[in-house]
Length: 237
Length: 266
Image (cartoon, rainbow over all chains, first blue to last red; front, side):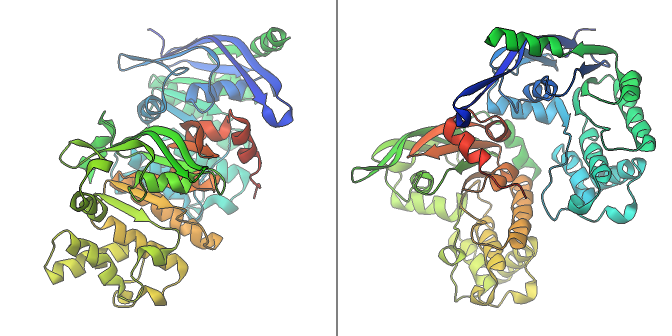
């Protein structure tokens, strides 16, 4: 099957104007592909640009050079050069992103935070809430918390709300940034299960995972990001 | 409501600003600002005091005449017009129906001595509704939508708290189902808890109604929450534009980097 995502020669450097214009090369020549049902795990120590690569695919970081080509519904888009409206359209239809931390509107109850992306996809309010409830129970979030805003939740509880929210909408490409970082073993296993299901239904995944067991369980392909960050440092010299 | 969402895919912009420029004497209020706004899209204009963002808002909403440049707007009949060429009646019609304007100071956008119900109903009367019962019913529905107790329908906004006034101002603006709403620091000057409630409300209404919004704010948190795209102003110029998360997470210009790095973490 042909790939859903192809990165070719992707490069990124930050210029920090407030620190005298110092340049921070992040990655250079990053290249890999993702096929439907495949989970690509980006590996390498912290600070090697894994999250930056995810953000460039999502379009929240700009890409200086190279191509990030997404193919969905016979439409081919180069995210590296796509305009804001194109990227927003891709997010509505093609690319999902589970961030490391929950960022939510104050005052909004957990269950509404989870239901919101479904409603945005056109699911009726009642159905969206019931799906959200299913997902939250599956992730063992105590029901008494559902009607509360997650600001006061523990790290693990917030992460589960975030996962419930991010895993709900159907997108053919899913980006995961350390989805199991603050979870206990039981909930980690549940998330691994959710990821397996996504893969079975043909969804392509790019993930950052530090937990060895989780990585072993979900990864089809490992991409060592260190080579791209070394190349970036050498290139900038 | 659902038929409005489909407009998101409409390829014609709703509003186009081209080369908008305004001088205040020798001083530059706004210099050569251009952008396009589509239906259902929320654009945040950010920058510090004096950066020209309020001037830009006034130019966009025809409250100020540009020294150069123009604003094109696609009217409800589908015809795109140059706003400077509209006659007074046409412009008034836009203001009363197709546009909303939410002021930072609710007293500027409300009539403080008439009842809450009349404040909302007045906009409906302006577009020709005459049936008192229907008008009152719409007003009551809108009060409910903005979380104001309908028992207060006959009270004047003078007796309302700041947050309630702001919500009433929003109801008054949205009752005619505008396609475009201008907002000038809508959460400015409110207590943080009141602000959070208002943001949640705005966020829901904007997405439910598929509104296009141009919101001026100096609060990057508000911009992140409400907007799709962002325009950063400095010294009257638009120095950086892009997707909101792109501008906030990967700011390119020195001034934008300064703005973003100056946010106090809570």
